[in-house]
Image 1 (cartoon, rainbow, N blue to C red):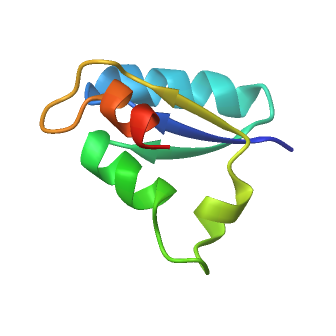
Image 2: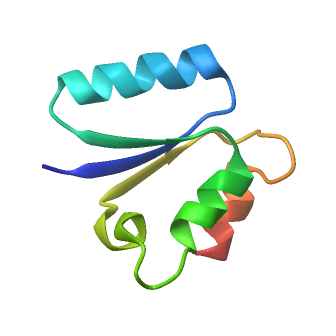
Length: 74
């Protein structure tokens, strides 16, 4: 099963997307903003999220840190 890291600051949009992806059989980890996305991607080496992400889906415009800034940092 593929693991998806989903970042979206709009709660209802994030919930809807996560539900649709989970119904298709994906394991989805939700992030509510760019800061949480950065923490999940750049966690310590023992982080299970860091080791298991197959795909990142991110909103582009989010407060504080944008999705593009996070992806550029990868």
